[in-house]
Amino acid sequence: MNIGLIGYPKSGKTTIYNALTGNTGATDKYIQAHHEAHVGVVMVLDDRVTKLSEMYKPKKTIYAHLEYHDFPALFTEHKEDINMNTLLSEIKTMEGFVIILRSFPDDELDELYGKSDPVRDIQKFEDEMLLIDMVIAEKRLEKIELSYKRGIKTPALQLEEKALHHVIESLHEGLPIRKIELGSDEEKAIRGFQFMTQKPVLALLNCSEDNFSQVDEILVKLKEMGYLTAAIAGKFEEELSRMEAADAADFMADMGIKESVRDRLTHLCFELMGYINFFTVGEDEVRAWTIEKGDNAVTAAGKIHSDLARGFIRAECFQYGDLVEHGSEKVLKEKGLFKLEGKEYIVRDGDILSIRFNV
Ligand SMILES: Nc1nc2c(ncn2[C@@H]2O[C@H](COP(=O)(O)OP(=O)(O)OP(=O)(O)O)[C@@H](O)[C@H]2O)c(=O)[nH]1
Ligand SMILES: [Mg+2]
Image 1 (cartoon, rainbow, N blue to C red):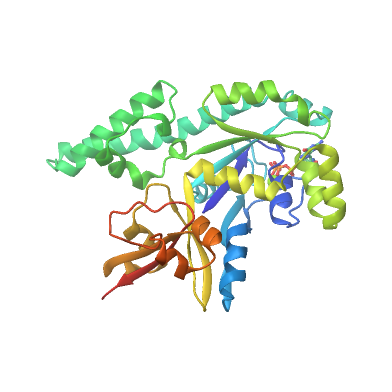
Image 2: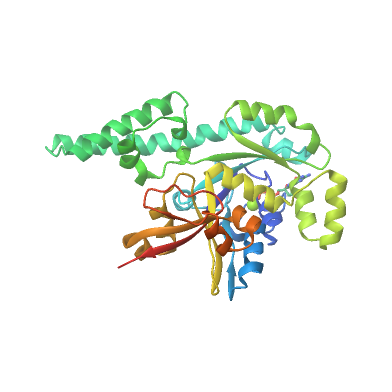
């Protein structure tokens, strides 16, 4: 999964990126924004994979991973010329966004960008994204109408036109595309545009150490606005990520932080995207795979290899929890917990699959 860290200038995107990835992107109040995204890969240190690896003792153990892309600030005047179109086309390849909102006081930043106000910021930011989507949708509509005038009026074009009208109408009402109920045919017709407001958004408050525990009201407000939301103390977390593990644990206990920022954000991103993990096990490899909640066995098989989806016969399937409880595949078979599932089987989080196939 790839997630874009986006937001207004100096909201703490790079600080949080550093905390998450252990990388060292430059963070400075005074320098101009970096020109390109920093990209960092974070392993999803799932205890279940560790446990499976202990049981099967494979040659290789592969955890799921997610990629964070720390982008330059959006919707601001860049003195050095960042090519906005290039930047936007890169941002659009993200599966989801974490919008980082400055929630720490800072006199100089307050003077430059106004006093910290996360609710105002996310509203403005979403409005800017709406506008981008609107321009794209309207331009495309004009082209479609031109085609009509030239006598080209295919069913596909008509469907696209209908979907775009639907989208534009909602955007005009200030509704992001992710909140519109689109028919599956409409959804398909507009997929290629990779609209900004169609992507899932996590609203992340970047707090100071001092106000970290005082942002509940803002979190409630953001929830009411329909956002999945959380607060972290970005700079503190960046410092933690550079400490020895034992020291970091002491500091976290002091602050009442139970989980590392990596694990917390990993869980939130899975929740945001509606993703789950299934596993494959064996002597060669124990591995975690990421799919969407609701995906069936064929889609899951296709993640492993397209041949497995094409030649899918059945999936041998058991649950991680059952395996741990009963100790071996043999006992699971005796208890009827080792199942053969067909193409339509909806894979669950923690399923262990082996695909029978024939190509
Ligand atoms: N007090 C405080 N300062 C922070 C925090 N996070 C970031 N800062 C400071 O804010 C400034 C900007 O931080 P960055 O992480 O570079 O922000 P950014 O959003 O990546 O900035 P651009 O990429 O230039 O838009 C730096 O001086 C940071 O030290 C925080 O949680 N608390
Ligand atoms: Mg930055």
